[in-house]
Image 1 (tube, rainbow, N blue to C red):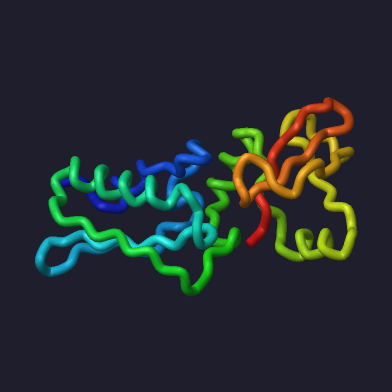
Image 2 (image 1 turned 120 degrees about the vertical axis):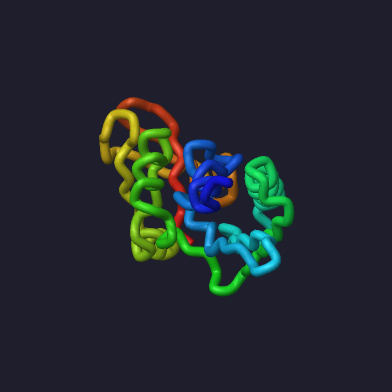
Length: 159
């Protein structure tokens, strides 16, 4: 049977299909119990994230197809997921996919005080951008637009 970690590195986020669950930082632990049961612990990006059900199904399917018959996926909410758990490789993948990865959390807090967040356009690299919607294709992203190339893009908000 294949290594569990290698198998889990093939499970992708259904909402951002370039990121694995490890890239996203939601994979907390995985181990084999004495009775042969594989236990995988994940933390959702936020409680109520609609992708978590699909991710659990995909984890089970991936491990069972590799011969691990008994798979338990546990979802833990504490400590709460943070964008700091994302891998650097995951942030690079996001940018290449056209989504600006999360900046440090203090940048997002400044936006609460009415300060403009300056993001680099993933298409043309201009910093002449503006937020056009606090929520984008998913709740964890905001919609921005580049004022130079006029392309819209998502920003993965800090948590």
